[in-house]
Amino acid sequence: MNGLIIRTVAIAIVSCIALLPITWMISMAFKPAAEWTTAAGEISLIPKNPTLSNFVYVFTGNAPDQVVSLDRTVWGPLFASLLTSVIGTLIAVVCGTAAAYAVSREKINESIGLSLLQLRIFPPLAVMIPVMIMWAFLRMIDTWWGLALIYGIVTLPFSFWLMKAYFDELPREIEEAAIVEGCTPFMAFRQITLPIVASAVASTALFIFILNWSDYIIALLLTRKDWTTIPVYMNALATAASGQLYGAKAALGLIAAIPPVVLGISIQRFLVRGLTFGALKQ
Amino acid sequence: MSRIVLEGVTKRYGSTVALDDASLTIESGSFTSIFGPPSSGKSVLLRLLLGLETVDAGRIFIDGMDVTNALPKERNLSMVFQNLALFPHLTARENIAFPLVRRGIDSGTIDDRLDQVAGILSISHILHKKPAALSGGERQRVAIGRALVRDASAYLMDEPIAALDARLRDVMRVELKRLQSEFGHTFIYVTHDNEEAMSVADRMAILREGRIEQIDVPDAIYAKPATAYVASLVGSPRINLLNAEYTAGGVVSPLGKLAMVTGWREKLKSAKALRLGIRPEAIQVTPNDTGSDIVASVSDVERLGAFSIITSKTKDTEITAIAAGDARISVGDSVGLSINPSDCHLFDGSSGRRVV
Ligand SMILES: Nc1ncnc2c1ncn2[C@@H]1O[C@H](COP(=O)(O)OP(=O)(O)O)[C@@H](O)[C@H]1O
Ligand SMILES: [Mg+2]
Image (cartoon, rainbow over all chains, first blue to last red; front, side, top):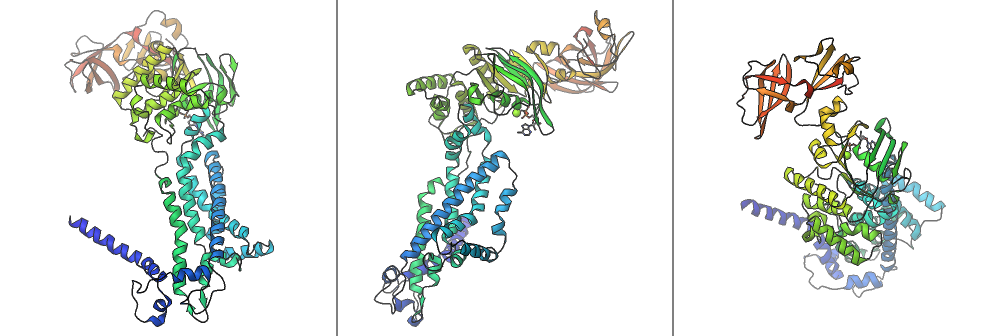
């Protein structure tokens, strides 16, 4: 009984600490400029005069309580982030799953998988500067395909290794059972393997989407103006007249949190349990 | 319904010879068991038959047709995998129906077949469940159901009941045998359990490190094992195997000299070093040692109810024998052992082949 109380209290404390910044951000997003500027003096967790002004500001570029209007609204970066993250995730998941399946089933030399990791072994800048030069040469700077492609490439190792672990866990006899019944290897993959690993694919995709969605440094180096993503745009949310636009940033933070959360909830029922649970004897 | 023939089939993995020049004929409607210790090539043999692996040498025929290089689906064989390999995302019903659905059979026929198979295996009540919700025995039945649901040339089973507990194993063994004979199916049944291999099969093939040591009916394998190795695999408790020698007067082993049986002299002519095999059940144990040829002291008694397994030692040679369950023998006793020479097996000392 005592243990339960201590545990409950401990969980409550940890949750409060973890949730405080998020709570703070939510509160800030609904505060009028007068409340979040340093001039406001007294700081409260609950907005005194809750307002949607920050949201109106980032979406339209103007709001009654703001001194200056924004030269760019959030629409462009929001679209850029969504498009490049989704396409990058598709590239990584499709290629990673196919490669992982081949390596797992055909026992191909695993150094292929290790070589995929090289982009991740070095500090991001050491890799991304050469990529930036290449992309400039290929005229892919500040294009959606240039950014989506590099997102797919840098997250490919994750999808490869995650999916390979799932395929390794899945005994080949399950596919062979289908092949004995007249399926071609591809049909066995389509009808048996893929449905079994669907949940693994879904959770891998979610993980990779979040990686791409929250990228800052790649977008910073490979975009200029047309295809800047939300994190880069957020950093630019400041004006000479008003300094850092904390209210607008908080509103944007809240907007940026929506896609991963919606995606997570919508695929929740797929998120991985034991894959082969029940297929085998024990 | 068909005859399956393997001719000199060889399969290598790197330097491992998984199957070595194996020739085997499986008659239509027979229950053949493939028996051997782990890693002797049993699963590889089934995989080659199914076409999941390709042979390195030799031919495979089904019903006179050369299927050596045929695709799995052209062989019309059905399989229960060692690890069952059920489809975890499908219900038991969908698992069992899979082979029929795959072949585009109409749903009315599928339902009929399914009811029939489910009835035979008594799994009608669990058909709506997914494998994860089934017990080990139920999964086993679903896997067997998936194999039996369609008409295959032969039904291959790789240690299908090895993972079940002892009681369920006995039940399933009898059921499988009944199913096979009732429908006249051709069964190829792999096991590493000698009792199982003996009890279900019409014919038995014994594998050792990829080689087929002997093929025969179980009784003949028990009565006349072709090699010392087969003798040691078949029969429980294990056969006593002793080094022996043929001298002019007879067969001399640590147990003394065996009287010659008519016909031995001719066959032993060229033999010298021998292995003498005596089954525990062929040794008579007498509680007191008076008048016995061999006197031994009892080192262990295992009472199993109907009979007892007596382990005894004579002149540093350990001998296992079987006595009646109520025999008054205990550890430390001196007992008499008597052996009828005509119950003995003699194998060549170097090749292990049967001599008499
Ligand atoms: N795919 C494979 N790759 C390499 N070696 C294999 C493969 N399959 C089987 N073997 C080897 O072949 C031998 C026979 O294996 P198997 O038929 O599975 O034995 P069991 O009689 O236990 O079923 C073993 O030594 C095993 O290691
Ligand atoms: Mg095996």
